Amino acid sequence: MKNHLDFEQPIVDLQAKLDALTKTSLPEGVKVDFRDEADQIRAKIEETRNSIYSNLSSWQRVQLARHPRRPYTLDYIRNAFDDFTELHGDRLYSDDKALVSGFASLNGERLMVMGTQKGRDTKENVIRNFGCAHPEGYRKALRLMKLASKFGLPVITIIDTAGAFPGIGAEERHIAKAIAVNLREMMTLKVPIIAVVIGEGGSGGALGIGVADRVLILENAYYSVISPEGCASILWKDRAAAPDAADALKITPEHLKKFGLVDEIIPEPLGGAHNDPEATAATLKKHLLKHLKALKLMPSKKRLDARYKKFRDHGQFKEESLDKAAS
Image 1: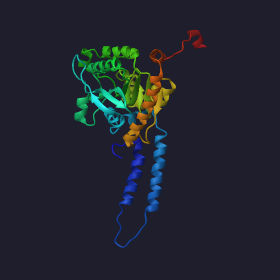
Image 2: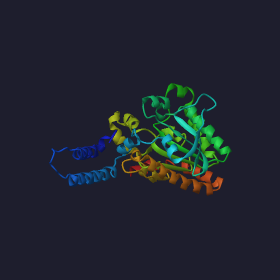
Image 3: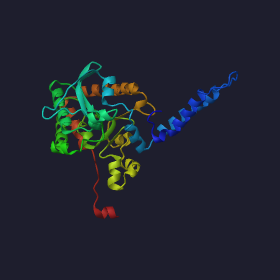
Image 4: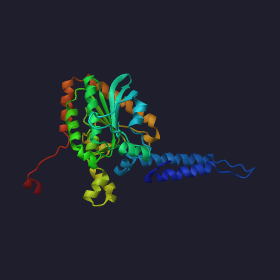
């Protein structure tokens, strides 16, 4: 296994034993059948895989969401969509390559698709700014959402970012305002909007393209107001406490679904989307088509009212008097 994670080591060790067994060379004339032993190791590998991936901790899910071989936005656009034509620029400052967007079709349905894009190597990550968009990225996204609305095209956003870029240049060009304007404008956009978290869903950087009628999330992705490391640095004063922070933040798809922050969890192949990107893209496509069909049947006003209520209901809490709490 290339780029395996720490908790996957038992699988790697068993696979190494299997490889060594199948490559064993014997002296000429000596015949030994290793098939039974190989079958036993294969069965053990499958058993170990099922055991590990069915009992993942919150932190292990975060690690899978960040896996270097995990499919990125452009991978899903290539495998799930057709006729993608990328559009560039915010018409104010520049083109942000951390956020890709353009016209595409899904089973013949014309639409606008956009998402945050990470790089595969250091050179591409510098170009893509590690998937962390600048203000011009969010302004480009909004410009193209409004273009889609003008032509009555649904909008699909793909989220995979640790957060919006926090650099001085981004602050000078008003990153907070760019995200805030997107939140406001996406709430009133009349066309159907579907957002899907495919990896990391970090803070306002994710929410800046995440206001949607349906919010979907892949099985091994996460969506959080802060990264586990950032939370650990603030609360524990130690980034090594990130696993504890991941548990406390309740950022896994199951928790998010329970709290009403996402609408559906999209299953992945055993071990993560990187083990079969094409199958994951096909599954994503199926779910997108299902939700797109349902949203198109809804009257525009009803859809907008439901979208507004959906986000207004986030973060519910209960109030108690001090006397009652003390008792």
